[in-house]
Length: 346
Image (cartoon, rainbow, N blue to C red; front, side, top):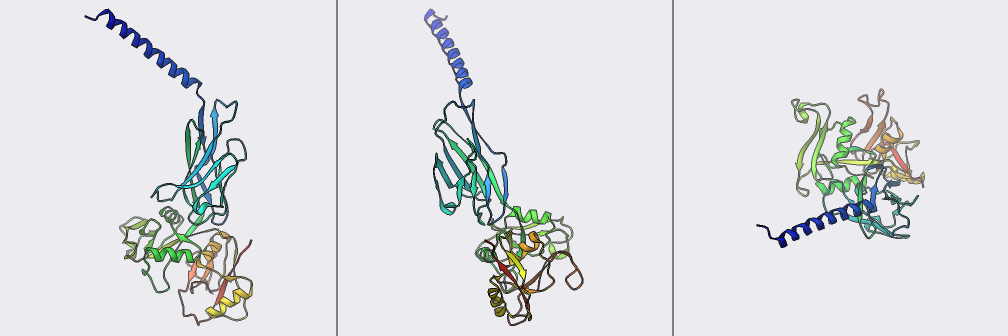
């Protein structure tokens, strides 16, 4: 039998629970909520230019007096591996940037609540996942924006021959050609655009892969469907492959130097310098072919000692297999060819 005392305790608990529930409802109803949003969660940029990663915050209902907020941006590489790294933090007009982003980032602040991040200039390693976090002392919210480069992938091998570079050598080789190792996403997009290459190359994630549009015996057999074939994760020091490099839009001009005679490699270097330029790199030639439409049926030296030429409209004596950058390999440097120069536009 329930005693009178116990009954009164139960009634009191029910009353208090009801009051607390109603209090919570009233508190939530009157609470000012912080919203952090981005109209674009995927931003494309080009190396050497600038990019704006949108981030906006607002309160609902609107504040009668502004709160002191802290804006913080974080970055994580495309692979998603490793912890987030600080990009910048800002409180009011005071801000601080970190690491490789130092001096290259700022907040746009075009309107109240605009915490968009401006990066200028974009560097080859800037692609990845960016998180915008707003903290006002009472609560914090964040939104994520992904940055990728517009560009193209090209295959590259050592001047000593094929399948001779470990991961670190492949990464360095791409960087020397004004490019960087491609990501899987970049290689896949290039495969969708028609890149067909039967030699495996390193990618940024440490895998070795190659894109096949037309299945054939020499590229894994005719029984396999078109796609990006993978050797999986490889030993970065011991295993050796070619490389897939990614290049983005260039800031300068690539051109075939009109010269009265053909040149050996040393003469080609000097000729570009005399013209106020420098000899072009492989990545720069590919970018000029892809983004500027450079079409030149003349083989010319490049900085790595290779001889190539870009074709937009295939024609007799210029290769008829379709558009592309034709390669004559790495001939002896005493042989005579033309030269492609690169002139920077500031």
